[in-house]
Image 1 (cartoon, protein in one colour):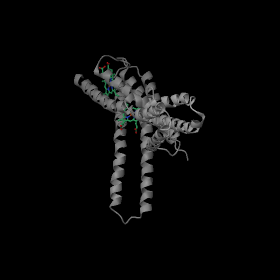
Image 2 (image 1 turned 90 degrees about the vertical axis):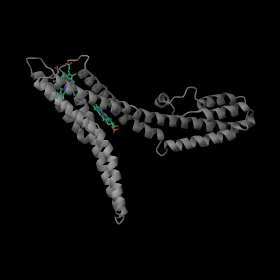
Image 3 (image 1 turned 180 degrees about the vertical axis):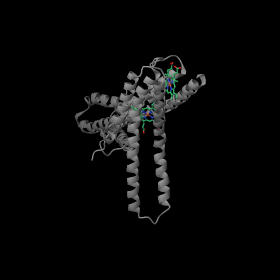
Image 4 (image 1 turned 30 degrees about the vertical axis):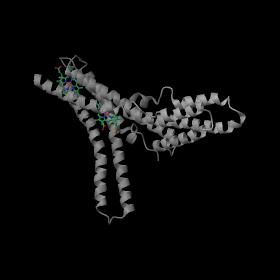
Length: 308
Ligand code: HEM
Ligand code: HEM
C-alpha cells in the first residue's frame, strides 16, 4: 500500500479545515463594516488576532512534539530492557507498531502544520486590516511571512529530495560505501598508473589527493568543485591515451575505466551531500526565526495592552 504524502494526509483533512477557516475569515471580513474601518482592534480584528496566535502556538508545538517522539522511544526501550522475561519477537512487534503509529501521528502533525501555516497568512493579514508601518507590529508580521516562506521551501524539499536521494544511491549503496569504493578505485588507479609516464602518474595522484567531496556551505549546496581534479584527470587521460604505443593500450584502457568509474562515483557522492544540504539548511532559518517571530508577537501583544 502506498503511503499518502503529507499534503494528502487522511484525504486532505487539514487542507479542508484550513480552506474552511480561510473562506469563513474572508467572508466575515467582507461582511463586517466597522465604523472605524477594519483594523486589529475591532472585534473581528481581535478574533482574527487571537485565532492567529492560537495557530502560532500549535505550529510551535510541532517542534516540541517532534522532539518528544524519540525521547519516548528511548524511555520505552529502557522499560522493555528491564523486563527480560518478555518474548523478544512479541516486543519487537509491539515496538514496530508503536513507531508506525507515532510516525503517522507526526506525519499528521506536519500536514496540519503546513496547512495551518498557510491559513495564518490569510487570518493574520485580515487581522492587520492591511495597516502596516515601521513598528514592532509589522516586524512581527514580516518575521511571520519569512518563516512561512521558508516553510514552503521546506515542504518542497521534503517532497522532492528524498526521492532523488534514493534514485542517486541506486538501491543498496550508502554514502559511506560510496566513499569506500572511491578510496578503493584510487588505490587501483595509483597502482595501474605506475607503468606509464610521470605525467600520467602525477595526474592520477593529483586526482587522488585533491578531489573534494562536500566542504564549505557553497560546495555542499552546489555539488561543485572548480576544476575538479578527477574530472580533469579523465579528460587529460583521453588526450594522453592517443599518443601511447599499441601494446600499452590494454592496460591504459583499464586505468581509464577505473578513473571514469571513480568520476561517476564522485559525482554521485557530491549529489548525495547536495541533497542532504538542500534538505537541511532551510531549517536553520525556519526554526530560529520562528522563535524570533514568537518573541516579536509577544512584544506586539504586550505593547497593544500597554498602550490600550
Ligand atoms: C500572528 C499573530 C499576529 C500578527 C502577525 C499581528 C500583526 C499586527 C499588525 C501588523 C498590526 C497593524 C499595526 C499597525 O497598525 O501598524 C496589528 C494590529 C493590532 N493587533 Fe495584532 N497581530 C497578531 C496577533 C494579535 C493578537 C493575538 C492580538 C491581541 C490579543 C493583537 C492585537 C492587535 C491590535 C489591538 C491591533 C490594533 C492596533 C492599533 O491599530 O491600534 N494582535 N497586528
Ligand atoms: C509562522 C508560521 C510557522 C511557525 C511558527 C513554524 C514553526 C516551526 C517549528 C518550531 C518547527 C520545528 C523545527 C525543528 O524542530 O527543528 C517547524 C518545522 C517545520 N515547518 Fe514550520 N512553522 C511555520 C510555518 C510553516 C509553514 C507555512 C510550512 C510549510 C508550508 C512549514 C513547514 C515546516 C517543515 C517542513 C518543518 C520541518 C519538519 C521536520 O523536520 O520534521 N512551517 N516549523
